Length: 195
Image 1 (cartoon, one colour):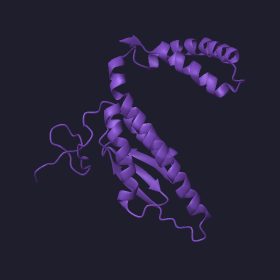
Image 2 (cartoon, helix red, strand yellow):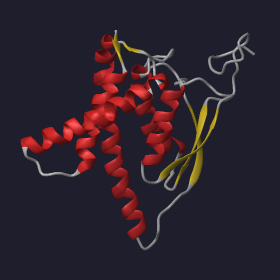
Image 3 (cartoon, rainbow, N blue to C red):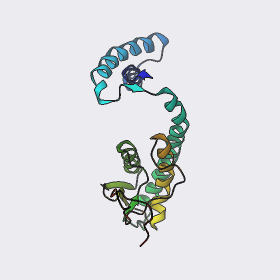
């Protein structure tokens, strides 16, 4: 286990390099990196209580491939959605079929739900409108929803990877719990109940 805040400080220093806009010479990059460290490390230290004190390195190595796949698939979907929305806007017939779709989730942690909800909202043509904690469902508005599955299928692919990344109780490949069925005993959603 290692402390998390120095790693966060290093990430902030790298972010500084990207947003700074500088001449790409080794000396200038090194100078800006040191400035980024001087700003990032104290900031990371000051905000360390917002995050866990330790970072399990073995877990991060295990989930890194899933995170890379998540980002890759999201970026592919993002590019495709940009072209689809541009085509709809430029098409004289304006071929939109707006709809609001309930998307029951398998993920339960706040971080996983937020990641998926933000991924939906960042994708042109879709917007996460609400989250129903009782049903563990997102409500998604889509400007092009020829069917419910057309909206849900890309989200399911992201969720497969999110289940592994966020170490959820359910695992990739597990069925989606029915939000209309409540398991007896704990009041949690999901599973099948004999009538």
